[in-house]
Length: 238
Image 1 (cartoon, one colour):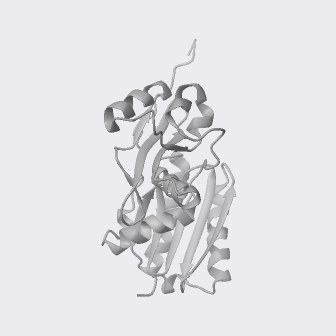
Image 2 (cartoon, one colour):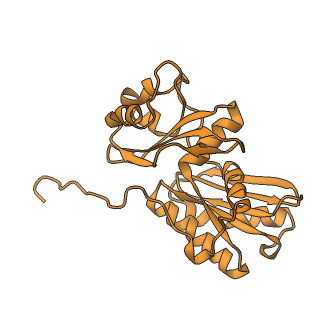
Image 3 (cartoon, helix red, strand yellow):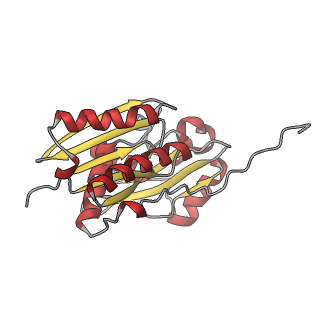
């Protein structure tokens, strides 16, 4: 059975990433471009599509990064996804930012147990725990949460009976930002080298979702913020 043709779009973190699977070949572009996603995302898509001599009408669907991550970045990625999908009447599938980074750890290092932790600002992290399934897809073992870093240890002890003998692999910017609170929870030493999601990892997860009938119409593309409200600390004298 031939592979389907998919475009992947992600702008959920400081990284901007797109991938294209077309006629069995995968190409991708990846840039660290904080606050420039609205300027770079469509040109990157256009470059990939032209380079592969592919049009939207030749695609079977679009995969997008649904978050959690930057509120603005997630909205930009979904807005572009919806615009392209509506124009060509394509189904879409959303992929978790945290799950995508866990998938990268499996692809790059054959890690089968991973904790993803992204700096969520305001002294919190977005985090999730993932293990490999029989289809070689990293699957969540807990609900994705936003937590103060000092609470993450107890969360995983309670949620997955985290063992401190065989620690999972850690990915994401959270380990770097809150090393004192989180470092004892991961088995890898040194600074994590998987800090942001990559569209190629989202491709594997999204392709599996499409194969299992999880594609939906563009109007149903939804962000997953995890943190639904933002609490601003009142400054003294204000």
